[in-house]
Image (cartoon, rainbow, N blue to C red; front, top):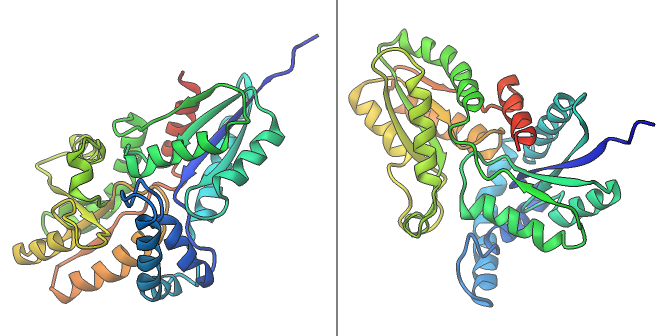
Length: 318
């Protein structure tokens, strides 16, 4: 008799996003209450998270109103999970893909219960953060292990994939149509825009900036010609020194140089507020007001076949 196939639970990690305007403030609190984000002891971290979530709520609600009153991140992640699970059919194990959000539903605890009910033989932890950071990947992994103590099966970690060839090729394929359109207005400048981090976190050894720059360099190496590009950072919060240069500053520099820009959301693989509002509305308005000849924004990888294949191989290549 043929033995039953092994059961593998694949956990896709993402930040999560508010599913209603009422959820915006508690979502912000959950974000800033994470000790990986605000590195203060209690009760100071709790008090600061309460203060920040209260003071930023109005502005954040305005952002989510522009997206129909909620974040599309969960729907996008569900689509990626479904595509990945479909790609894993026919392998030598039964694969079921689960979603674990860090700061909103489905929270890690909810996902852990679903995985327990599935009763897998092994677990694969797969972040939708291509570049490793203590603030994202490490925080999600720590929360998983805290909540999943009752799951007594091996867990395999995919830490990051900044130089994965399929991941790089997916970026090249999404970039080229926008780049060619921009090239009609002269040689464009590519802005590889990543979510920023406080400089002190990188100075403490966080590899995020280095890995982000590795990805940008690998993408450019596959493009023909002398490519004008820069890695820049968006979504700064608070008074600390954050990674430089900022995306806003690079847009202003491009305007001064009278060159078109192609913005690549290099650290994001799903559409959400930082892409749909910050890049598509705020920075586009800025570019147009400064007279930039062409402003193009490359879509996130989302369910691009090469990206899904990259994830599939990460699940299988152990």
